[in-house]
Image (cartoon, rainbow, N blue to C red; front, side, top):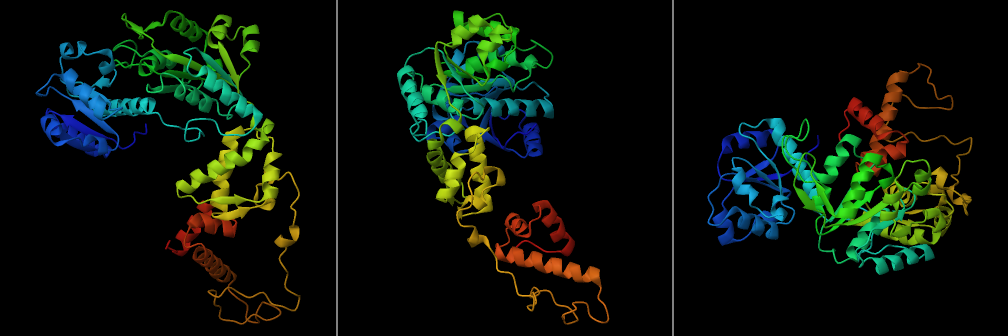
Length: 481
């Protein structure tokens, strides 16, 4: 389980020594938190990377509910783990504050239990943060100049403010989540969370718990209660990506939530309100799935109140220059460099079928930036499968060959104890293995010098894999500069 670096904030010194030992094992920072001093001197939690609050039986000048409310206001998306607190202290908390408590650390907890709660804190923060993982412009609208994108943009503006369900269809990689996020930004729920969930990426037996949450002891491994995506999306938008991959038994439960606007956690009896707007997306043909009894017709009509279709990139080639400009801008911001596209290369890309759509285009840009940093990409620089037009000036790639009378110069760094004549092999013979190793080492050192020690670029020059070059550098004791 990969848990990113998080900063543990300890309220109360209960079990501080044990917690400190566990934190050191995990490579985490642990800070004791003085709440009165925080109130008096200002807020330092905001500057910490990925803080997680450990709330024990502390004595503060105000009640726990007010403390959590103030923390939530000043430090958005702050997950809280409790330990040593009586249930009575937490039962009276408002629902929005109960949601920030992602679990309870039991007395005498194990290392594995702490890691599990830190993972929940990570998932909680990622779900609540409004991170734009797809290609959008600064104002949240779709990028493109094609009539298809302009039509989608107009539909988003019209339906965004209406709190109705939307079904987005289109091939994988066309930007369906971009449309969903744009709908959220145009809605009255824009200040609420945008919570995505990929229905096809979660195992069937865990999907119900992920959507609705579960109570402690609801099933094996449910050592703590936890909220689901419906609770995390309260007051905002829940994006059900790849709804066509949802099993039939879960389709029934989703239909009930849409109809009644209520749900219960797995293993729970308390009915919770579902104050969320549902946006769904799929790359499958749901109408055909209805015919084969793979998708419920009643759920389809509940979701398909307002359909939006994203056309594949091959049908809107005029958007490619705009998308490339934005993608290159982003790679430059990330410090990866940039590339320019020759008109012939742009023409070739417009003819590509793009089975991976915008995602494939993004991957290509990243590859070209690595291969030709701050360079110009022509047709011949494109990977073979993207070359759909002829190179307009093949002569520029021709390298003049030396005349038969000329001798190819040896690399400067390769020195040998004999002079090379027309016959190449001296009378006394040579140590072929030593000769080839010296030559290989010399070429590797020259390649590294020419690219300022960047191994990946040196590997490209030598036309070998990066891992192969690293092994040879280790063999000859060549150090990176």
